[in-house]
Image (cartoon, rainbow, N blue to C red; front, top):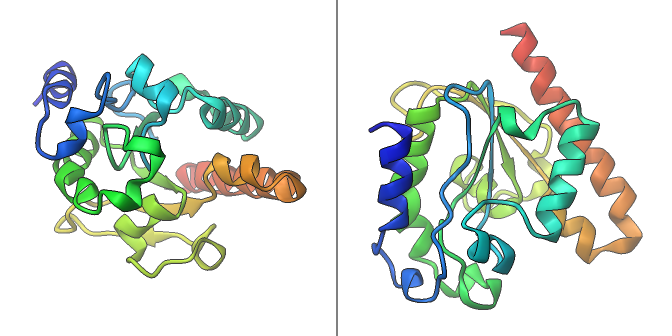
Length: 193
């Protein structure tokens, strides 16, 4: 499936009940064959209105973090584990949604094929690091997967979601610096491949 078909198919998806609550589905954004990809959790209200990932307050902070790490947002894959906004942003109330959206994650990764993927936030990190993964234990850790892994052969790492910095103002500077460091490490790893 090419990138245009993928966007159309995601916009028409009705695999779970979340489609009943969305304004717009939110497919990933990417040039073809970026070296690095970022997978976050789910769209918020701004993303739902725009049909674009990571454009609200957390998304703006995410873009600043990318810039500080020397990454140009338009040169990477940015997507979510879920393509429709959960009501009140409570993805925990929709436990089947990530499983239903899994096929879109597989398709986006297959279509755009980033070599390194940064999982942004604990929900996204669970895709690769397991359901009991805790961000403080896995951030900055790299995991290589083989071609038979559901999401393909690539290198994975995890970092905080920018919303963590928004919700913890006393830890904001630390979280943001760790995010920058984690993304720089992923970028440096690319240079070694």
